[in-house]
Image (cartoon, rainbow, N blue to C red; front, top):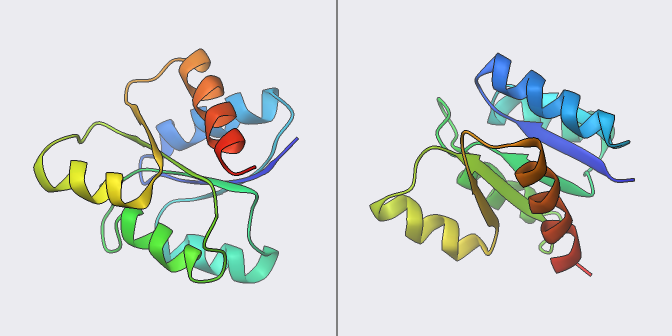
Length: 121
């Protein structure tokens, strides 16, 4: 299974994502914002893929992905967010990452991650 980084500023949502991914056998590292995510990556290395919220205080998920991709340009990514309008649509599309709308189901999370991982091979 994959080594994943999950970044979401909402603890309940983050915990649910982590629980579902671990139940599927993934090794999951979680962070509540971009700064702690970058620190975790500095300590543990780059993951196989990232699952990110877009709207977070400080550094948003799109900027975080851009920073992570400086070290690995082909890093697979998926966004889980309620935001989907205007400039967010354009910015997410520019990353080439998959988008899954919140609220999500266990199946949409699983299938989104499968598609994200397949797109990197």
